[in-house]
Length: 177
Image (cartoon, rainbow, N blue to C red; front, side, top):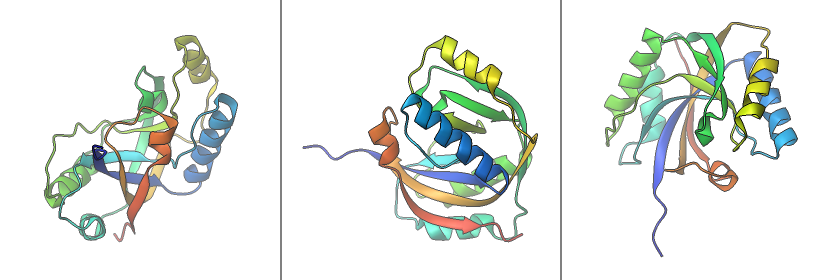
């Protein structure tokens, strides 16, 4: 039996009230389309689990850093399972800096293309259904502030409900700036 390949992913977590709003959207879509429920997040960096302590990496990365605020640029969809339906954020220098600090603190430095987005559902759907959902969703805000980050161990490939449900948070830190 081969051991499952895992990754270590660093997430940015929205602050309230956006956190509750996104959580509600994710839960509603999961219920309507029989999809997995997951925590609202923006992926900052992905690497292989190594000898580093994710708690220390997050503490060092977030120390004296002002919580980022990202502007939503669009709602979109794709054929990728983990980007079925998602909000895209405008590029942000502070976010790129956080990604670089996480990369520097990781024992295994993988190339990761930062593409800030927040997914709303993980489900194989028809293009028509995704387009209909895209056209029906509105947010009561244009900017999202983030107040914490998490380190999560997950399967390297996320292609099913079981893969999403296998996620395990191994560290969480708040911004201290």
